Length: 121
Image (tube, rainbow, N blue to C red; front, top):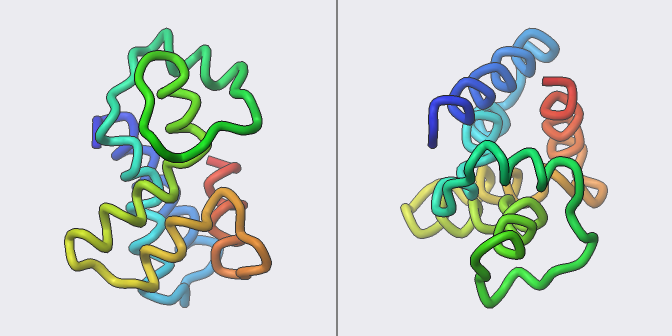
């Protein structure tokens, strides 16, 4: 992960632990890895700004695209991509599930907490 994303991940984990000192280990690890799915597609500052200002609501996760459409796709599906990376590396399924759901918790209270802390950071 680039420096900015590493700093963000550490801040999310610190705020999570400040808010919930007894947070389960998989949740803390997911806080540190929640944006790891962004690492395989480096974005320029300009592209990050464009994507932050506007991302269309629907783009398929596959096939992976390039250019601005790929950046939009990354914004929408980085949780899924990160979960795939965690699983491929032999990581915890619990962490992968939390990373996959951190933007759309779908009734998962731990993923909802991670989303809330992430949005406040």
